[in-house]
Image 1 (cartoon, rainbow, N blue to C red):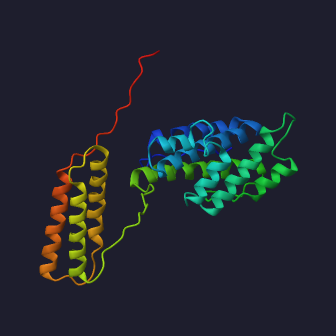
Image 2: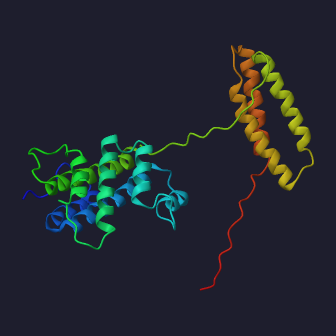
Image 3: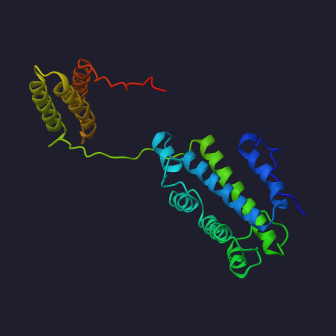
Length: 267
């Protein structure tokens, strides 16, 4: 029987593909139930790694995937999330769904069950053939092993590629920014008038109120990027001076200190 194994001679990371290389020979020895549960468990873990590689790193992502009652903590939700994020193809999504249904058939019964059972074999027959196959898989057993192993390899390879090439999700949030009215010269004057008003309100403020106006200035500086139109050299110089004045005002106000969490010494 042909053994499933990843050829790492081209420099594949042993740490990334080591588990899969260990699983390959094991798949040939397992009975039907062990084969199905091992493939599904590995796929669920690989999907978790793929999602972590793609999502923003941090405790929020960890809580979504591995935390208590994690929304993406099970096979079904991870399959759907990976497809929704464009991390797996439609074919891979369909194969993962079939594998999930096969897993459920084996996991939810104590009675004897095999790959040749009508319902199970139907799911296997609905799976796509592995792209690496050179010979037709004559049995449902061979098809599940080849398709399942190929699927796992793709998931791990995708997670590794995202990590190496920096293809993870980028922040794309947006906030409403109000511009300034009139022609470029008028917009700059409007901005300067608003800056004078902000400075007046900031006079003699302290604490939370002063911190608030510092944030107003930071946002105000970002708004100057929306001054648009054909700007004359004189207006461009005026805009430059305005931005510099805002920067200096921001720098004159200390940034608010973040509160430090108190650590308990209790055992």
